[in-house]
Amino acid sequence: GAVVSQHPSWVICKSGTSVKIECRSLDFQATTMFWYRQFPKQSLMLMATSNEGSKATYEQGVEKDKFLINHASLTLSTLTVTSAHPEDSSFYICSARTASGNTIYFGEGSWLTVV
Amino acid sequence: DAKTTQPNSMESNEEEPVHLPCNHSTISGTDYIHWYRQLPSQGPEYVIHGLTSNVNNRMASLAIAEDRKSSTLILHRATLRDAAVYYCILPNYGGATNKLIFGTGTLLAVQP
Image (cartoon, rainbow over the protein chains, first blue to last red):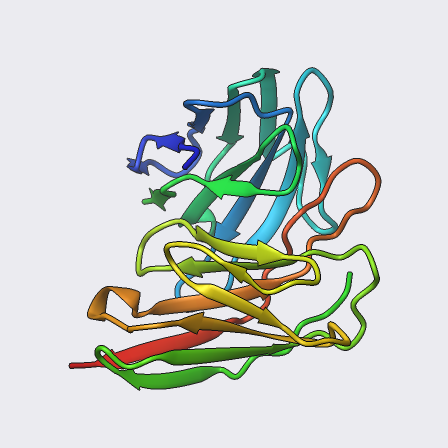
């Protein structure tokens, strides 16, 4: 099946710094990618939808200036958590939609710990 | 978004079949039914999807009710590696983007 890769798989950063997470579709082109956040023992929460070459669409309650999303190519989207705080510590997961639109594949997730 | 309802948890014994139910009474005629599962500390994994007819693949089978208001994911022989949270989702086809909104899913425990 299609492969979506995230990097890094885990990261620890200091409070107040910014951290970037990459999401790549390895064997297909993804016009649309999605970013989720998941806290322990909770379900995935959709943060934003990222379309190649255009601005991301954020879900209600998600701060676009804090979670910067860039989708510069058909195989790469990045999420930058700016001025990270301990409450931003979470499991961040990206997904990518195939050209046919019927299937969405997920990355392995990235653990962010802000200390 | 069309809403889905799943039991919070289910248990199964290893090597026995598992039937995971999902109710989606507000499904529209063009909504596909998608199933994903999430193993601990991993991203969700695509399992299967269908529209009207029953579907089979190497991982599972999907049985869709005739009125499409419910469906059942069938694992023919559960293994310990099938222990995961299973999500039944009807993608929001808003505009040109179909996005997956996750509910709470069903936590499947598999006993040896």
